[in-house]
Length: 276
Image 1 (tube, helix red, strand yellow):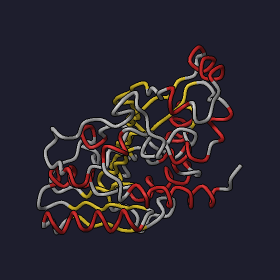
Image 2 (cartoon, rainbow, N blue to C red; image 1 turned 30 degrees about the horizontal axis):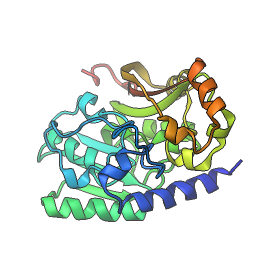
Image 3 (spheres, rainbow, N blue to C red; image 1 turned 120 degrees about the vertical axis):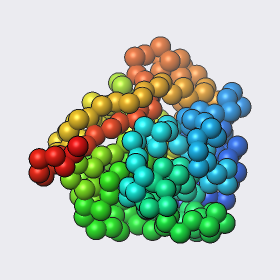
Image 4 (tube, rainbow, N blue to C red; image 1 turned 30 degrees about the vertical axis):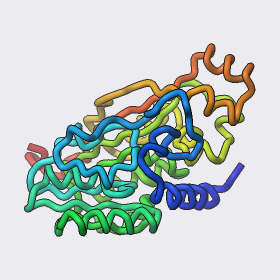
C-alpha cells in the first residue's frame, strides 16, 4: 500500500498529464485517470455548458457534479474552489459573485495553475486568482470565505479529515460549503481498491458515504444535507484492467455501489443573527 505522500505525488503526476489532455479523453475515463472506455462518453461529469459563466477552455471534464449550481453564492461573496483545475468552477462562481466579489482557486498541480491563469487572463478577469497549494494546508487566512466549493477532489486526498478541518478554518462564521465527491456504499473489490491508477481516477480513494458525512459533522459543521446523489457506473472495459471476468460479474451482482454526492453544510455562527 502506498504512503500518503506517494499517493499525493501520483495525483500530481496524473493531473499534470491531464492538464494538457483534451476534454473528450478525460470524460471517457474515470476522472481523467487515463483508463479510457469505449462503452460510454461521459462516466462521471455533469454538463456545465448551460450555466452562466461557463468557459469551454476551462472545462476538462474532470468533475462528478455541479457544486456551484447548489452553492447559494451571492453577489459580493468570496468563494474558494478546492482543486480548481483549469478554472471551470471558478469562472462559474465568478459570474455569481459579480464584480464586487472574489474567487480563489487552489490546486496542487503547477500545470493546472498555469492553465487556469492563462484562461483567466484571456477572459480579462481581475477578481479571480489561482494559488498553488495543498488543500490540507490552504494558502489562505482564516475566516475569509463566504462559500467553499469543490468538485471531485476530496476523494483524491488521503487525509480527508484534515481537508474538512481546513474548510472550517477558512470559512467565515455562518459561511457554508457545497462539495461534489465520490463515495461508496459497501466494499470495492480489493484489486480495484488497491489500484494506484484508480486512486488517481477518484474511485479507490473514495470512502464510505456514512463515514464521509460523519467527518463533516465531527468537524463542527451544521445544517448538513445531501443536495444531489447519483450512481456511477464504471464500464466493464475499465474494470477489466483490474478484475477478471468472474470478479467483474461478482462485483455487478453484489450490493456495493459508487455514488456521486453533492453535500452542503454550514459553519456555525458566532453571534446571533450572523446567519440571517
